[in-house]
Image (cartoon, rainbow, N blue to C red; front, side):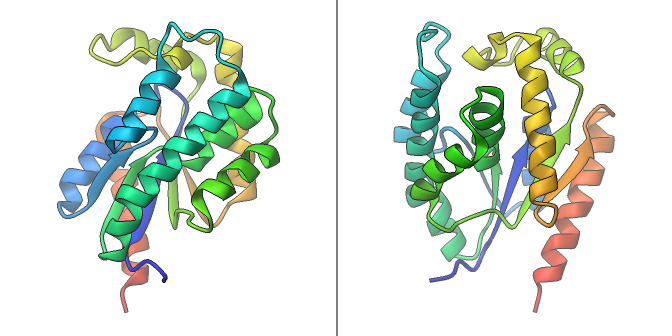
Length: 210
């Protein structure tokens, strides 16, 4: 059965500010469901803690990719698909593109290989719209270091070269999925980025109206 709702995902390198923007969007849209990956439901949150634990430095890249896919599957079945079936707008902080950019490209596992793993997890459910917040890794890391209240996870501790590869991976994805992914310059003020984001989302929702 085809979902009646609208699935919108938010992507970007670490420090791009997407979590701040997605929270503002959720307040603006009111009836939208806000969730995140990995996480969103208890089983996936447990997997998140394993993936992002700064003590787990021995984690193999393939293990990492498989854990993300497992968390993604449970999250979809428990939370995302039921909401879409009920006609909700679902706003998700990260989805499959994160796995393709981080594990597929930056970790060197191969985007097609990681996509195959995730096809098993998501079946045919892809976002209708993906907002990609683009930022230079140097600025992103500077923001993270200034934000004392932000969760510091295992991926934040990677070197700058890794974060440059993540950004390169996202740029390749924009070329691959131009109809789904929209790039926004995330180096501006919070209000500037938010206004651009909400305009794009409202336009896409308007297009869907009968």
